[in-house]
Image (cartoon, rainbow, N blue to C red; front, side):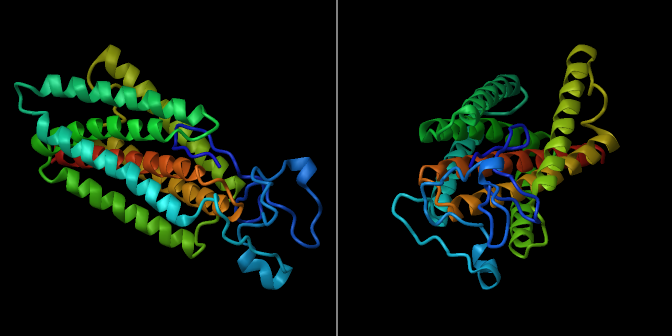
Length: 296
């Protein structure tokens, strides 16, 4: 299982039967695909089966993996995610309180935020290309990202739209709850086609934003206008929808990792991926709120 957000690659989607799996073992009556399509990355677990084996047990008689010491559980994922988000929230609150954003100091505070954001991005990239989770690296990413979000939120809340940060938090929580409900009810079919479409859309979105940034740096203003006015609103909505899609992929990876008996340290990767995605959604909400208020 590998955690990531819209700018990072994912692995684990190996079959297109309605839901994704970690190179799922063939069900009863199915063709053997282990040698052709790869093996379960946690094949040392003799109970590794279809992540939806409990649902399919009556039809296929597939066994369930019992709880095992050293294996990732939902409690592990929740605790690691709470820890990572807790570090992010604490550093964001400290940055908001300790770094003034009045007009006399805003440039210095903004520079600190940009520096923290760049360091957080580098740490995220390093962890994304590591084969194993590094808790220290993940928590360091959360700390620097918290500084970035704290200053950015304070600037928007103080100078553009009062209450914008709380609105962005509520919007992020609403998206998380809605996607979780849709995923649990199986209204979202997370399969290889879904993952490919989301990755392609996210890649196009990121490339457009990079082009817009280059035009803004060298041409001034808002570049191609993708972050202001009607175009900015449209791209803000697209950004939130992409974040929602990646939440569904994150949920699927967590479910597959637990079903396949992933090592407990993989819960840190799950926490890392969920944090990246939630930061993405929050940032898009904050930007969208800023655009809507600047157009008033």
